Length: 268
Ligand SMILES: O=P(O)(O)OC[C@H]1O[C@H](O[C@H]2O[C@H](CO)[C@@H](O)[C@H](O)[C@H]2O)[C@H](O)[C@@H](O)[C@@H]1O
Image 1 (cartoon, helix red, strand yellow):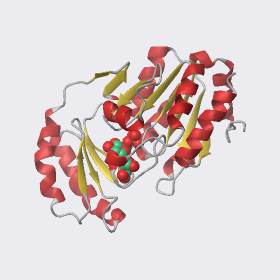
Image 2 (image 1 turned 135 degrees about the vertical axis):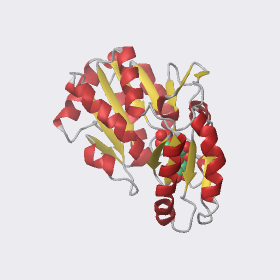
Image 3 (image 1 turned 180 degrees about the horizontal axis):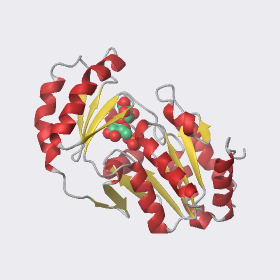
């Protein structure tokens, strides 16, 4: 199967990757892109075939990266990514960097400790099934396991946005999740900074959730500066905002694995 874009800019991006694979950067989100969405965040694991396909691509392209809202070490562990040669994992929306088994993590801003104390009081009034995921540098409130996840999310949105503001944090909404995380970094800044560091001549980014829109913005900004790029949506019924802006839409994590395999087969 040939990898085909539905847009001219995406076709140009794919062609640039195939022409100079050694100078290309391919970056992937974790949950919903490399790993199927599951009810319990601790049970997320890589899609069957994803690790092999990523490792194969990494042998034929300049750099493969994972850019995730997860702590970098958690994505590496849950994804089984540690053995992929040359892989970079940018965790906590780009605040952390994992490479060659070592994680580089900045100080946690004090607002996270404040939110950690106040958040349980807010959640105490939420419907059953709403849970907090403590990521060290950020806190995520998940509503997926509530009887009415969308209703629970909307009830909490204003309260969590207010807590974020009081604590000097930002609220990052996602697939039945509202995260409280430090400001100053997002997936777009992370992608851009990695592409600049590597001097990438072409970029591909694949994601599924609202936090990935910043990376789509970065691909568009790079294109405007003359660096061809491709925006890939790992499609789902839960989020449509990415599909509307993507050059290429695939059918969730299984589709991402097929894309990785096809792309690699076209590079040699
Ligand atoms: O940037 P990502 O790699 O996509 O991480 C974003 C958040 O993903 C996780 O939550 C999502 O996946 C869970 C497991 O499938 C699912 O239960 C939840 O509903 C989703 O929102 C993760 O738990 C968060 O920490 C990540 O920030």
